[in-house]
Amino acid sequence: MNSIGIFAFIGGLGGSEVVLIIFAILLLFGAKRIPELARGLGRGIREFKDATTEIKSEIDKSVQNTDEKK
Image (tube, rainbow, N blue to C red; front, top):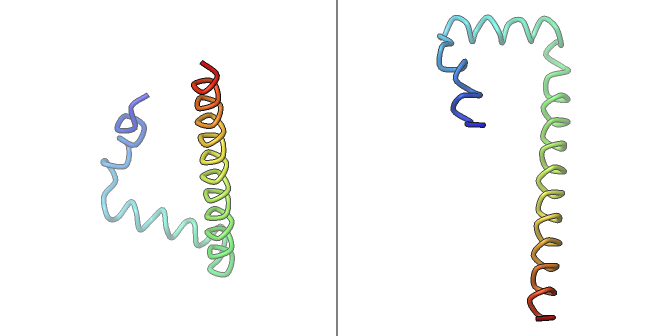
């Protein structure tokens, strides 16, 4: 799937819509919870990147091992 197609809806947002969304998030979660949510999101993204890096390195090692056996 094309990433441009996935995020195409963002291009239709104007300044007032973004402000309204941020205001709604502030009302729902409160100002104290938003940094906690952002930290949790950052940790999750970091763990995901670490896992993908680990998987890529394992795949590269297995490819190198098969090349050495030939």
